[in-house]
Image 1 (tube, rainbow, N blue to C red):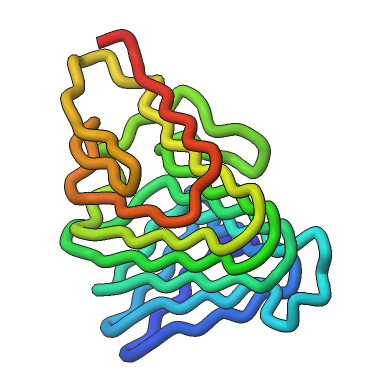
Image 2 (tube, rainbow, N blue to C red):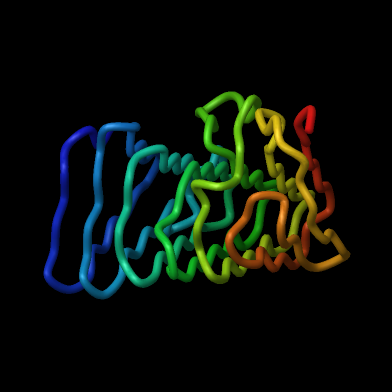
Length: 173
């Protein structure tokens, strides 16, 4: 678990075999980029588990995982950031929502995800994208099509490729 702060004047690169949790009080801050590589050798069949609940600050975030069944959760992203996620092979799950945990993604909103652009390529396998705005009490407007989601509380656009299952949870607004 990363409950502490990590700060770099350039790029932070984290290589993870099994799990990385940036808990709600943790921070990652880099002036150029944050790069996370999960299960780089592809030997862990269970895949990488990457959960970013805390605050990260960098112009860009890149997450690349190996060939296992990976799970990625992101609760927030800074304004004007770009995010790139590539999960490669395996039956992968990517979750977005302010209340995402290692096992659930409900009761959240999308406003803390202030990225300009997020590009998600889930590679081969039976892959699931879960976007949770079920905690929203105001009316939401947005656009969902076969390759992107915008609005619904997101500041920017979420582009996706190779998603077999899309789950979108909306609130009471």
